[in-house]
Length: 150
Image 1 (cartoon, rainbow, N blue to C red):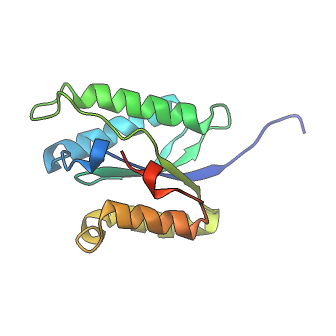
Image 2 (cartoon, rainbow, N blue to C red):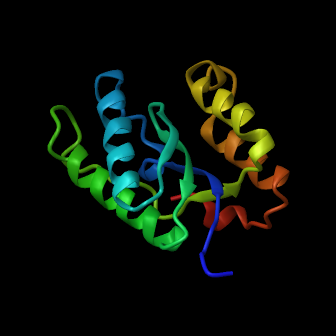
């Protein structure tokens, strides 16, 4: 085949350092827009980005030209630098070290999109840690609880 073609829909999840509930409503919308811009730059267009107080969900089409780890490194680095310039208690902001990334089939994109859009409501019933454990179990990802959180 002469041309490389790919569609890698990916659901990425990561939290603030120590799940600190620092992302107030005033910063979330511009933060999500900033994520979208960085993702576009890294050839990984966003389908939807949504943040709550202590974590973010990203649904994007991962670039065929850049590794997942590099794209996540760049979006975390860029948004962290941006957040530190915002008003409030963000001067010492950090994202957690790790992340979760899960493949999404084309037939499930709308379901995942709806799930991400409903984060505020969803987290009235469940913590980030409970949610993340469920994703790890659903995707059959082995993990050691001692190393998942920071």
